[in-house]
Image 1 (cartoon, rainbow, N blue to C red):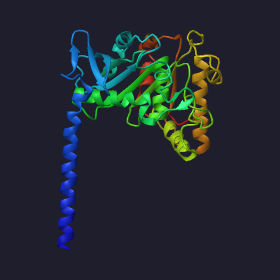
Image 2: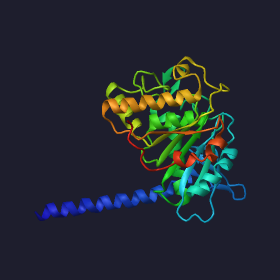
Image 3: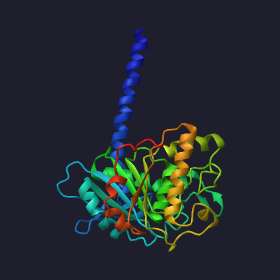
Image 4: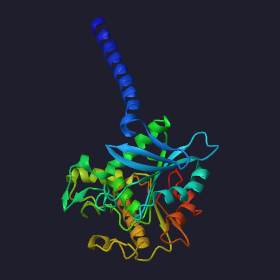
Length: 310
């Protein structure tokens, strides 16, 4: 009995030691996320260079004044890669909701279309190794920002518009950021449909085993996702016209409505929890600034659970 008690105490001490070491190591990771000699920072412009897995990423930041306990807001730009303008467009929302803005510039060289809009899941028709998927960069950014703020448990929100919305759809479906407070997918050309038959990157098919795919689909539908649509976003400029994209609808508004209704119907049929919501901004077309500054943005980012779907 005494020997058993000693063994338990010894095991507990080991666990405590491991936990302490992990905490130290986690703070030590800051050097791997920042520049070799620390974070390269330009305070006046709100610009930081983060090194993520050895790749330099410029991040435009904004910190509201008089905000003592801010959440973190990550903004993913559209096809024009104008991260700085997205940061500026998010300022009023950040002021209203007390959020620090981080708007990374994911450049064309390191994040071409197949890695950005389509998440880096498929290349030349083949599934690439999971550890190489581009969607993991979001987890890296969240870790980096939490370390930068010295707040390892800071709540965070994700927002992507247009190409950034396409990216976030793949991030949600394939990396499942379950600790995000809300994931706002705004006006993308395409979604990851909640389907195990539709092949990736437009569905979950062809990536997982049948059992894994079902589990992934269920987890996807349980994420706190907002499909945020401009009611006037019915044009076709830069709209993906691939065969898989056309199956989702004839414009961005239709595609968003279809993705949401499909998700809602599947969750209801299977008796699964469903945490998605759909919010529409009237009189707004394909405009990131318009979506971020619209009154409906507050509803899109609302952290409370949506009403049960009927």
